[in-house]
Image (cartoon, rainbow, N blue to C red; front, side):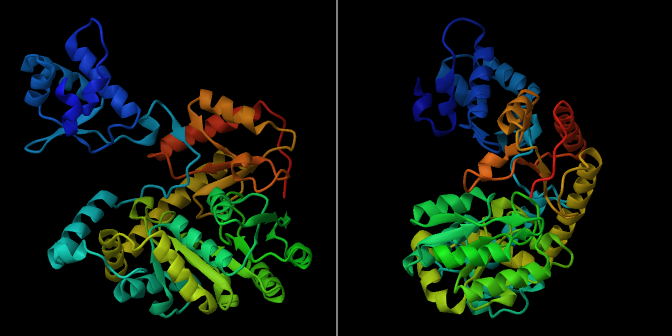
Length: 460
């Protein structure tokens, strides 16, 4: 079969052997390729005549196969353009509703697809494509950094554009920060008992030991941090000050100041990962405004606009600016020129603020649904996730398995554990389901599962 060498028809190699109608076998191969991720939403299928020629069958057989695949919701046609794999909401995929992945919810009243299409076309019309797609300065152009500084201003205040680095996503920025700290002789990083898993991966990659600092109801305990620093002498503290991932705790201004003071007394770098601040109409001042000489401020667009933009903004402290920029160039020579241009245009022309307002509106609506269905869960009114305490003896793994059997994907505390001793609970993400009705039904499913277990006790 020639399908292996035909770029758009390699999925035909999945054609099941044996009897049965050929058209049904084609649909089965197509369905398997979509299920396994070989074919993605938007991928174009070969023309029907091409498939007929590859398989050695008549055209009507392939026409029937494509029609059956269309009826199953696998493909869609665009007049004059061809046949494509249909985009489907996560809850359409094998009946699974994903409450485990933190995503911004679909913006109310705006089409993200149209915004991307229109802005990309405008960027390509204004710029020479060859120049746009060539190599660009690492960390972004001055114009892009100026737009980034404007985006950061509500929480970070005025910042010189030259201090801002554009990174291809927060994980790359985080890796650059930890590489810079390790390169300066750092040997240990302090985190909360439950923490974003990506920082644990990056810390291991750069040989940093992870030390766990106790928390209380307000978040990281500054006095416990001071005691830990006195005995272990770590190099840096990692903190998500706004709607912490996963526990959804937001540090108040007094706690932020206390942590800044403790870090200053211990000569500790602060890694401030702040992806959710812009979801708030009036975000609290970033820790970087309280201790600018020692704080790396990192803010991604993935949690407030769209993860597909692959854009984050990093402001390192002045003493580590050159080292951080060098680490970033080593990890990622430059951000994507096209995405950076789109983001910069959105910020400059006010589109980003409109999109943010629409995401905020939907986030608040979803948080109200969560408060109604799961009143014991905690999280900010603007948050895209909530935290649900479970009793220490509760089997989160069993709850996870039972949820999967009911078509629900959940994230348990074990996924965020920085050490063996940590609170027990669930992080429930609210932005993944495409519709509010699907979210409500999923949360009611979680509530039903919890109703069969003992009531959860507060864990801090």
